[in-house]
Each structure stands twice: as structure tokens, then as C-alpha cells.
Image (cartoon, rainbow, N blue to C red; front, side, top):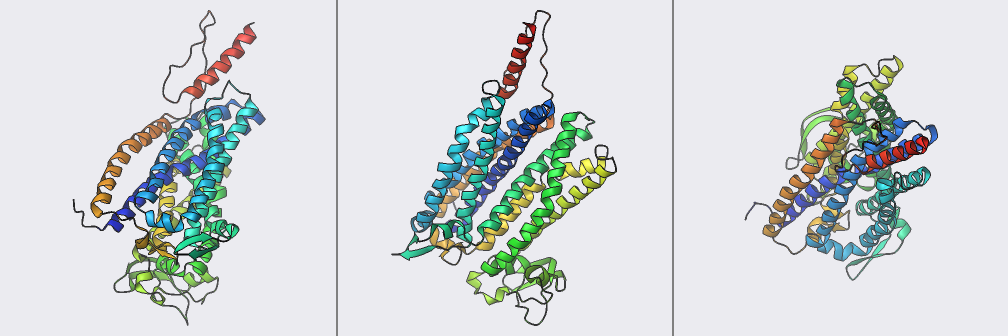
Length: 479
């Protein structure tokens, strides 16, 4: 089987494919876990059943996303042994402990409280259940902390030494809190919350367009739009300071992102809105830019100097064409998020928030924008790091396992088929639940007092527990 690609190229494609599937689900889980904690807290504070019913609905989406995230994460981690064994051999003394810290802290915390969160309604007290939900939400954030620390160290490595060709940790504080880590952690956390906020807003917008105006739909749409209004502009700010950090520590990546070839010594660098970077010709063709704006954004000076790609050896340059456009897709999605948030704020002020079909259509169309921005951002980050797997320390080609192109190609085909089937079914079921939308919890009774219970169906445990609680309450009142 000859796909016309080398083992290195196929291994990179395989990892990109699996991580692109995987990152979607933790992003949903991180954002929804915190959203669920807020919903349950509001229910405890106000005793408003709307918050409880919204919790009941979104915990199903969370459970499905969490499960698919765990499965896809396990598969992805195996590739460090199958395709990237040299990386594990040389850098495992750093990345191994960081990933084990995630398991010992985050995963154990999530595993310990997830069962109570999913199945504890009617079995534990409300405050205990809220505590379990809060612990799961904190666990997802701790997991993100350690994963981002490991990945950020690969972007801006420090705190280590080489002994006999093996990386040996010297300063764990420097390793964990490496130069790019705080910015990347904040950027990813905001991205996860925006992914979930846009998902909730799109679901509510769909039902508003269908004519639903009940409290469940209106409350979820309102909460999601407040979240987007608060976080989308903040994400732009965090992205800006993250860019300054990239300029300092990964100047070749920054130059590739901007399609910037010649160092601007006597004039400001333009910001290219459009262009086609040509790696062979060493120029950005058909460039349309705004003079001096690139220097202003990157250096906060109209004539600030920014290194061009020609300052770096050809073998050390990332693919400018890929990161140039992936970055602009990410920023474009961010601008649209801000426009959606501002439009929602204006219509809320004018009293047309729940009646504007234009806003609801915009919110529905923006539902996938969080995922698009997230994937585009990760492509920018990872492709921009090339040709290094550990920036400036270890090249990607030196991290490859001794495997053939045929072996990697076969497993890649299997991954594509299995992922499309398994996760395709999971995503279909998730979309089906969102199209159905949140429902009010009702318990009806026959004249003899027998409670009509919901039929058993996948992921209905929470409904049944709630109905059992209501049934017990009715029986006590009857007595």
C-alpha cells in the first residue's frame, strides 16, 4: 500500500486527525461542566425549577461529550508509543510526569465525583450533589492545566538539561510555568467556555426560531449571550498578549503567521488581510495589507521591527501558507463572535432580544464557530512550531518511531473509518438531543395516585431520579 507519503508525513497526519477529533470533546466538557455548576448553584439559591430543568438537559450533552473525550484521549496518547517512541524516550522524563499529574489530580477527582453528578439525584442531598458537580468542573480545569503545561513546554522549553542525549528535568517550577504557559492556558480556557456558550446559544436560537418562547429557551439563550459578551472581547485581548509572547519566544512562527519575509528595518510592517505565502519564492503573493498595522499590533509601535522569515534557515521555517490562513480563520471567527455579542446586547437593550429572527439566525449559524476557531488556533500553534517537536531542541523527524509508511498508513485508514463511525454516531445523537431541546420536568398521576414514570432510554437516569424525588414528595404530602 503506497500512499505516496513518508512515514513521518503519515504519522503527523494521523496525530493531527486524532487530536482534531479529541480536542472538540474536552472543550465542550470544560465549558459545560462550569455551566452546569452555575445552573445548579442558581437552582439552590433561587429554587427556580428552570435552572434544574436546564441542568437536567445539558448534563446529558456533557456526559456524552465527556465519554467521547476520554475514549479519544486514550487512543491519542497511545501514539506516543507507536509513532513517536523517540520523543517519549528522549523527553519522557518531562512529559511523562506532567501527564501522570493530570491523572493523579484531575482524572481521579473527576472519576470520584462524576458518578454522584450523573446518578446522584434523589440519592444524595442537593448540596452534596452541587459539591460533586463543582468538583467535576474543577477537575476538568485541572486536566486542562496539566495538558497545557506539557504542550506549552514543548513550545517554550526550559528547566532541563541533557544527559547522555536524554532530557533530564532540573527545575520543575520552570518546566510547569514555562514562558508561554500562562497565555496559552488563558487562551484555551476562554476558547472552551466560548465553545460551550455558542453551543448553548445556538441550541436556544434554534428553538426560538421554531416559535418556542418558554422560560427554558429564553433563560438558556440569555445566559449564553451574556457569556459570549463577556468572554469574546476578553479572548481577543488574551490573544493579543499571547501574540507578543510568541514574537519573543517563537519569532519564526510569528513571521510565518503574518506572511512576513523581509525584516522591516526602516519602515513599519503591514498587516496582510489577504495573501498567498509562497515558500519557494519566499514572498506573499497577491498581498492586501494595511501599512504599519502589523508593527503596531506586534510591537505597539508604528515602525516596530519584526524579524522576517528570511532571517531563519529554510529548514527552520514553518509552513507559512497553512498558519497564515488558519490564524486568519481563527481571528475572523473571533470578530464574528464579538459582533454577535454586541448585536445581542443592543437588541436586549431595545427589548427585541427574544423577537429578532436575524439575531437568532446569526446565533444559530455561529454555533460551530467556536469549534472552527479552536481547531484553526491549534493548527496555527502546532504547524507554526514545525519543524520542531520541542521548539529549538528536538526536530519532529527525530522523534519518529522506527515504523514504515505502510504500517502508519494502514492504522491511519483504520482510525479514519472507526472514528467516523463511532464519533459520527455520538455527534449525531448529541445533535438529536439538542434539536429536541430542553424540556420541563412533569410528573402526572392516575386517580389512584400511581405516578406515571418516564420510559427507560439512554441517558435518562437523571430524569428518572428527578421524577422519583417528585414522587416521594407527592406521597409525603398525600400522607
